[in-house]
Image (cartoon, rainbow, N blue to C red; front, side, top):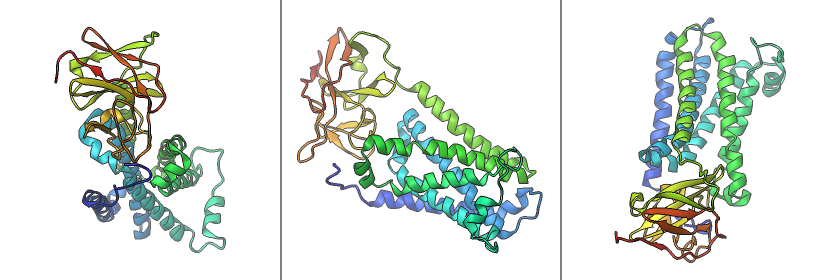
Amino acid sequence: MSVKYVPVQWNRNKWIYDAVLLACVVGYAWIFLKLGAPAAGATRPVDDAVLRMRAFGSCAFLMLSLILCIGPLARLDARFLPLLYNRRHFGVLTALVALTHAVAVLDWYYAFSPTPPLQALLTANTGFGRALGFPFEFFGIFALIVLGVLAATSHDFWLGFLSPPVWKALHLLIYPAYGAVVAHVALGYFQDVDNPGFALVFGGAALVVAGLHLAAARAGAPVAADPADWLPVARWDAIPDGGAIIVRLSADEAAAVFRNGATLSAVSNACAHQNGPLGEGRILDGCITCPWHGFQYRPEDGRAPAPFTERIPTYRLRLDGAVVMLDRRANPPGTAVTPLALPVAA
């Protein structure tokens, strides 16, 4: 696969994935509307319009929480990887649900305002100097803008136009957006309810997101501390045939050591397409295959097979007894390195 040729379009799996997502949103909204009013415990009566906007708002929050759980879950357990591959579809739908919530708020609370609804929203509450009554709407607006930008730039066109590093940095805004949503809910909705059930659900979701990220960080490959150029990776027989072991070289650099039968090769762990974790992929048809979007590279030189032109850095390997040693100094992208022959054939 290449940015010049995109065979992964709509297929049966993607249709099923999106259909399940849409069904879950509809099902959640229906359950909320049926059970939400009796369980709300609001200090003021809750009519149908308010219930609908809360249904979509809470749904968007829970969807965003699930999106942020997928990454660490996939690193902790490879069985979650299929959820990771279509996460962008999940994000676009989340942005649409959040937009529906915002439109419902404007149509209900500001529809009869003498000023335009958006202007009324921005000027109705300016009490920035107090905790209770803080204008929580601004947190929601910020989060909605971020979600909209990320949804609009989710297509691979923007990835190629902006470049993978810029695109990745832009999409890391999902984390401050999530923090803004938490603040939006805590300073807004929770101040109008007495029932602790919703607070437990939302607080629990935020804690799960934070806990999974901490667990994934602790379970990641250790940062190499040896100041020498050659670093020990693992025993060669601990590397799965067709798979890899990831060794982290610094806070922002990692290598993937792949075994291909009776040989070993090492390449950068970052795919040239979208910085996908190559070490979580496998060797298929003689090529390292990225688990995110299927981009392929030859293990011996880090080059995509013709007619594609993507290249990634390679690394030298040697054996110290049964231990694989890796030269931390990366070769330029596309540099050929003779695969390391193993003492026993696979």
